[in-house]
Length: 172
Length: 172
Image (cartoon, rainbow over all chains, first blue to last red; front, side):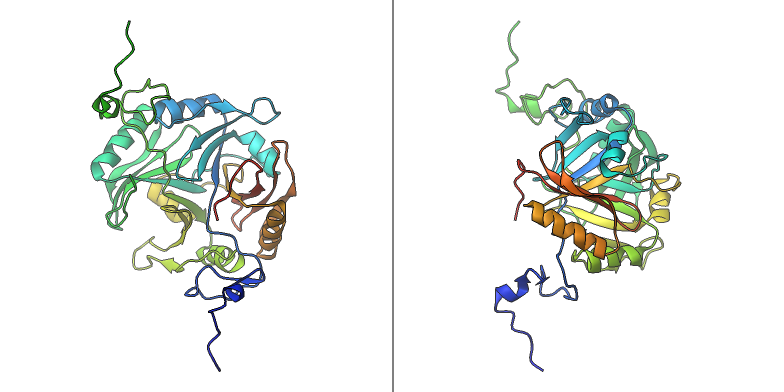
């Protein structure tokens, strides 16, 4: 038994059997999802209210509501990390677009983590969120994993965790 | 009435009144959230099942379940975009951590957008998701905004949109 020859990149990156890392065990046949997320879209009940919260309350820059020329097109985009967008979209329109039931709200489906460089920054941002109308569900405190964080909910109950993690280098 | 003097950067970037862009109307006093998301944490009912779906089914590289030395610490991390992580965390633990009610599931709270470079790539990834056990809620088709996309739900009903957008440059 000889080791496979990985010197031929075509072997590794072939469409039928591709791996991002030789170190990762390759057992899958098929198409791999690239490890990349382009957009997080939050379903909201009131687009103007959510725009006000994130833009005026939290200070995220945006061009405001766009796409109003289309039925169910009204949307708000925030450019976040490079090649990554946070979008606000009416919940009913999201349900219609994805062909899922809107259903009752649920707050433990997901959380969005926003890491900052110090405990003081966590405290300042939690205070800002509260002033912007967020509901503080868990005030910032030391966590079992060695960091310091707090949770708040946006006007639709979407959960954010503002965190300082000692081992996590925050980009400027 | 004279225009404010923005030649002094300290004025613009002072703690009490900071703006990321002079072009953005600065009306807020307080601390601004930096336009950055560090983590998206998905609340899941069965960590092993979700790990299998994302790692083995969709091909996302990960070191698997970590943090099991802590109570409610078991978590799965996927390194996605630079400085950005997708995490899987038991829903009950997320609700406990954020001090929110777990409640019933809801599928229109948010969607995760994964953009690719062509319609063919959308089709291939939708097929892969179906083979991995995802529920296709809306097969890929042309969209009113000029792109082409489809929606699927992961094992917990979390909604993903796989999209090709003609005006959107996808990084390699």
